[in-house]
Length: 293
Image (cartoon, rainbow, N blue to C red; front, side):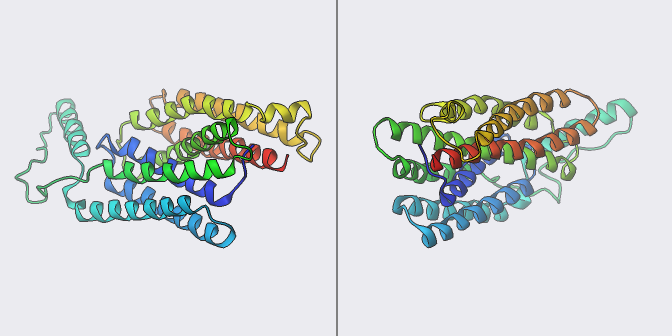
């Protein structure tokens, strides 16, 4: 069984969020502001994790890793701000492609941007790999936290590690998917493939997360009565409903994104709002029940 440690949960959230920040920024299509939004958000979560850990109980390697995550995110923010005028190559290419398409349909010629234009900065873009570095550093801290949370060692350690890493990916992916859906309001014309990719990733992560929480001693023990949830099994059924609803929302979101209307993206974003609630219910309710049991 694993413990519901707020510092670990916040670090999981930050690590998973930064991993999927890279998952999107690596395409070099989304504007630099999206990276600023996610980096600032997960920097705050990592800082809060450190504050809680120092106040309520530390796992030294986890806290050292958390500091490393924060430093790496700050470095990424500084580099991104310094290179903001260079822009994003994929975004410029998409703009030119759409310009050519409009010109072909209307006969109105509009020149695409070139490196010779006065408003085009020449230089190196922000390297997306900098968004992955905080996640890699944070994995070290999550491994330390998982080992510390395992009560009896051995197979418990392996299960604790699986649950901790799966939870990080699960929470980070669903959060970034929701934030990415909102970014389509900021950057109209952003290709839907970015949102499709991250929702598909969430669908692949879901079974790993759920299976890890079912493995003994897991949520099956709540259904059989071996573990008492304190609510006559109610929390176990709430967890099951959350897990099933999450994957249903993934499929419904994918279906919404197949519609041609732009409003489909906003519908998908609304569905992802709900998915965040059910995803957190899937992860945190199981942790709380198993810890109490």
